[in-house]
Length: 102
Image (cartoon, rainbow, N blue to C red; front, side, top):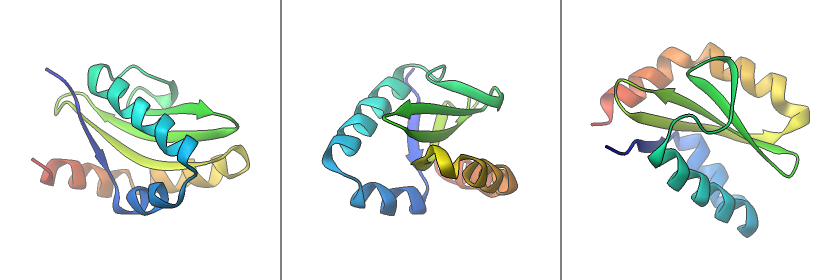
């Protein structure tokens, strides 16, 4: 059974202003994530991963039991620490968002 790929509201707004090439790459990543949750590099946890594209990174959370993946952020390497810290600080909020989305 395929994974369901979700987005945070902030990610959706960011996606809309990305360059066309970045949007196309993310769309391909979504198709890949629907098939397997092991895409990308783990960031200290099995459930927190990133995938690189031209100096930028797509950050996502994997919820294996629910078969859902949440796209959380996309940003440059220089913003990596700030983005990771923000995601870890808000992981419970993201978990509730995924659980409420049936």
